[in-house]
Structures are given as C-alpha cells and as structure tokens.
Image (cartoon, rainbow, N blue to C red; front, top):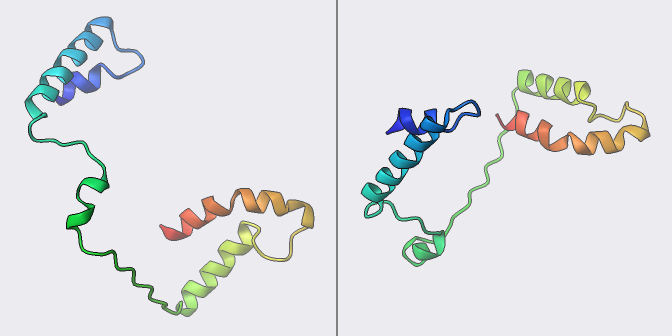
Length: 102
C-alpha cells in the first residue's frame, strides 16, 4: 500500500498514479476501519490517571553555561543590541527556544 499511495501524492504524479493512490487508500481504509479509531482524548480521559507534572531544575555545567551565553549573544538576546531590534528579537524568540530545546 505504501508505494502506490506515496507515488500518487507528488506534485508530478500522473493521473494514473493519483487514481491508483485513491483506490489503494480506500481499500486500506476499509481494511483498517475496524481497528483504527479516530477519536479525541475526551473518549479515554475518564480512564486515564490524573496528569502529573514534574519540574526539575538542574544547574548548567560550566561548558553548557558558556555555550548558552554564546547562543544568546549570537542571536541578539543580550542587552548589547540597539532598542530598534526588540521586535526582531521577539520574532525569533520561539525559533531560538526550539533550537535550545533540541
């Protein structure tokens, strides 16, 4: 199922590829509909234990602190920048946060 379905999803797929993709997708859906349930969390929420969140603070090592400070300097999050760059810093904040999270 995988190859015909993927082949029909490309921008340069032929009409025949798209037709085969639709057929295979439908067959796969029919075979799996008794096993795959598409529902949101409200269906199982009452059966789940309550959510527990643990917050653990860990000090950075000297190398981690040095790299973190360098990251902040390079991406303009430190006070050494001009005030007209504040909007730019805000716009890239989440990109920087995601990079650090990785």
